[in-house]
Length: 347
Ligand code: NAD
Figure 1 (cartoon, rainbow, N blue to C red):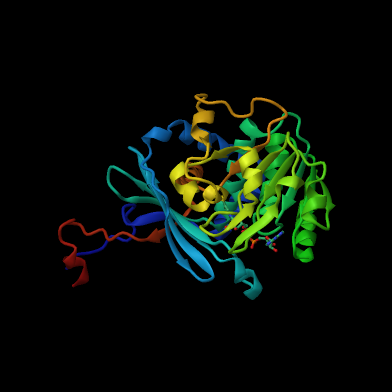
Figure 2: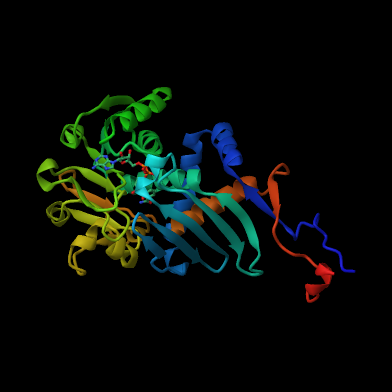
């Protein structure tokens, strides 16, 4: 009888569950984690041409979407499974949950399986702050945060740590979401102001982050609410028929995106003509194109979340845990002594 060597390294795949991710956040600290993620993101955005890229696969249903986000290069491959169901919170469930896999391209074997609900919030905040390094006005100190759900604290902390924001003006249609965000941010050196409308929140803000969840073409920001010399980090509109910005506002601004073919389908720019001018951020990060050129410019980052960001996040977590002997593993891969005798392990 063939034996499965379940203790063999080859059958075990490192697994980072939610508890382990929480431990990483607590032991390393959220700010060093965000900085580390940004290092990995910048490395990978600089190697943009080496990635296989495509708009993500999206299975839409009346209340939400389930997406698969694959990418890879000569070295590693990754994919994330993620959902977006804005009405979930009404039943005590989250809008966004996710997990992902990082694999070795040479053997095709998985190197890591990870929870990615927390990791998505961290990578999205790191991505937003990284883009803001190139696009936000110099000396920005106040950010309006519209939408105070699961992503919001991560965004506020990332902009405080990386950009130097010291004041956050919060608004959400649900007052308890504002209170929750305000409470959570008490641990940080950030002045938090609760606002009663989106208009009040954006007053005096140098940066506006929109991170709302609603499965419709919403208008969180109209053009007349926003002055020039502002940076808008618009990350909540990320599906066909799910937008946050008025088209007139988009037409007034210089718009930056992650990967044009996906953002044309999912981003706020789905409202514009397919040839409206945009710049892909990898061009800015490599220095091929300029980000912000003057303090007076109105700039929008139309962020939808792209697979390369998840690749960077998984690569970062893998490098953090791969030497860790305490890491959990999953008995995921059959490992017959004779690799062609798979049947043998069943008898
Ligand atoms: P969440 O459901 O936890 O929070 C969303 C918040 O938006 C809720 O508190 C809700 O009350 C509020 N809201 C809804 N409509 C509003 C309105 N008109 N004005 C003000 N507030 C409003 O969701 P989340 O996990 O924080 O995600 C927020 C959005 O960001 C989702 O649409 C999600 O798909 C998107 N997202 C994008 C990325 C990315 O990479 N771009 C990553 C993660 C999540």
